[in-house]
Length: 541
Ligand code: FSO
Ligand code: SF4
Image 1 (cartoon, rainbow, N blue to C red):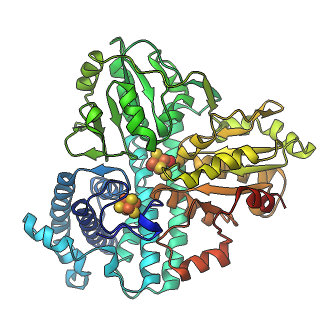
Image 2 (image 1 turned 135 degrees about the vertical axis):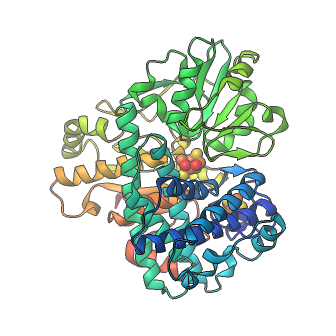
Image 3 (image 1 turned 90 degrees about the horizontal axis):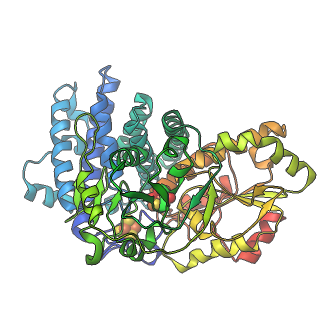
C-alpha cells in the first residue's frame, strides 16, 4: 500500500505497511481501485456533457459518495468498497454506450470487471505511485484530495436537497483530468486554483443548505456535563442525520449528545426545541476510544472521523452515510431519505447513563450572520485598538503531541487578540478560560470545518468595512491545523480567495513535492509552524 493523504501519514512520508489511521493494505488497495474506477466514470460523464448529453443527479451523487467514502477515517468496511466498485462499473458501462468515439477515452473509462479476483488484480496496479513524475503526482493528489473534501460537503448539502450540477460537473471534469497525461505542471496548478473556486462555491452551497434548513447559528452556551438518563452520542458532520435522530428519540426517555464535529449543531435554532438534546460529550475525534467507552450508550457515526473501535464498545457503534466499520451495524436511508434509528434507541434504553467527564459550558455559534450582527462592536474594538489582531485557527485536531503547539499558542497570544475557529481544531483551546474583550469572547467558534466559509465571509466583510483593497491588509493572521482532505479543500478555497501567508501545521502535507511546495511558498507565502514564541513574534510584527 501507499497512502499519504493525511497529516498523520507514517514518518511524514507515506503509510506503506498499515495505515496509522487503521487502514489495512487490503482496504487501501480497494480504496485506490474505487478512486480509479470513479475517475473512469468521470471521464465518461465529462465526455457525455461535452457531447451535449446530460448526466443524472443520481449519477452525480453516486460519484460524490464514492469520493467521500475514501476520505481518511470514513470507512473501514472492505465489503462496501467491492460493492461500490462493482456498482460504479455497472453505471459507467451503461453510460459508455451513449458516448460517441468511446475508444478515445482513457483506459480507466474502458476497463471493467465482473469478478472480485479481477478487481483484486487491478487494485494492485492503480495506486498513487503509478504516476511516476513526482510533481505531476503531487498536483494530481492535491486536486483529488481537494475534491474528496468538496465531495463531503456536497453530500451534506444534497441530504438537505441543495444541489449544483455545475459543481458536480466541475468535480467530475477535474477528477477525469487527473488521468490526462498531456496536462503540464502549469495546467494542473491552474486546475488546483479552480478546485479552490469550486470549494468556495461548495461551502457556500452547504452554508445555504444548513442555514436555510436549520436557521442561522446564534451565540449559544453548550453544556458539557451529563444527565442521569441513557443517551445516544452522535458524531460526524451530518445535520440531517442528527435531526432524524432527535425526532425519533422524542418521548423515549433517551437523551442525545454530540461528539467532536457535531458540537456546532447546538448553535442552530432548529435543534434548540428538543429538550433531550443535552449537550456535547468529550472532545475531538481522536479521543473517541476512551470517550466512547465512558459514554456507555450507543454511538452513531454519521461521517468521518471514525477510529476502528475497541471490542469494549464495538457492539454499541453504528454507522450511516459514507461512514462504515466492518462488523458494526450500518443504517441506510430508504428511498425517501428516511433513516430508521429504532434499534439504536432500543439499545440505548438498556444502557447506563454516560459517565461524567466534565462539567460546565462552552460557548459558540459565531458563524457569519451572528458575527455580522456584532460587527459594529467588533469594528469599534478594532478601531480603538482593543482588538489588535484576529487569528484564524480553523482546521482539525489529531493525535500527534506536536499539536499541543496550538494549545500553547492560544495561551500565549496577547490578551488583545481574538481567535476565529472552525472544525475540530477548536478542542485544543475551547475549554481554556481565555476571557473576553469588552464582551466579545476571545475564541469565536463558527462551527464545523465547512464553516471556515463563515470565517472567509467575515474577513471579506471586514475588508469592505475598513475599505481595504486587499484581504491581506486586514489584521488577520492564518495559523491553520490540518489533518484530512476536508482541510485541503478549505485551504484551496482560502488560496482562491487570495489569502496569503497561511501557516499550516503541525507538518506540511507529505503529498507536496519539493517543487510544488516551492510554488505554494513563493506565490502564496504558505509556511509551516515554528516555535510558539517565534511564530507569535512573526505574526505580530
Ligand atoms: Fe475534524 Fe475529522 Fe471536520 Fe475533518 S472530525 S478532522 S477536516 O473529519 O472534517 O474537522
Ligand atoms: Fe496513512 Fe493517513 Fe492514509 Fe491512513 S489516511 S493510510 S494514516 S496517510
